Image (cartoon, rainbow, N blue to C red; front, side, top):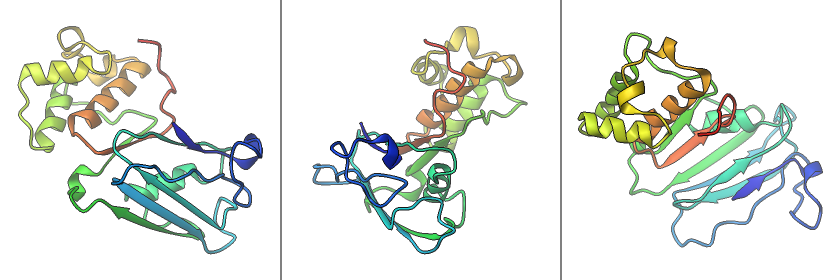
Length: 196
């Protein structure tokens, strides 16, 4: 796993300093990237101190944005996913592999679940499968739930209000996995999760 970190957290021998808030990571060696990103600082409104940040993600690769509160991690993710129009004090350029349709690019796992309260867990997963154009038989729903440590038979009929915080997080991840997104952004991914 590669990570961007606050420069203060990284020994000088372990990472190249880029002027302050984050350290850069080498580009992956894979010949084909899903995504290449360049972020250029344009003003003091920018939450990080680097003049420029570059990274690329290859299939199967994990990148961890790590830094103190207010370092710009969430801003960067929200802007990259299209959930925020601008990145304060910075310009972001994102180049996607042209073979990936926009609808398959990014799933965002928020800190709080986004299940529809009127639908049970299985129905929420079926809705995600349906939205991505996939069949949604009971076996597909159960398989998706089991992939995140939930049970289609014992948890599928539960309403969102009956799920613990950890179960809601797992269910939200199941929704994203059901949609087969190529890149999944996890915002505080381990908050509220119990071991499986």
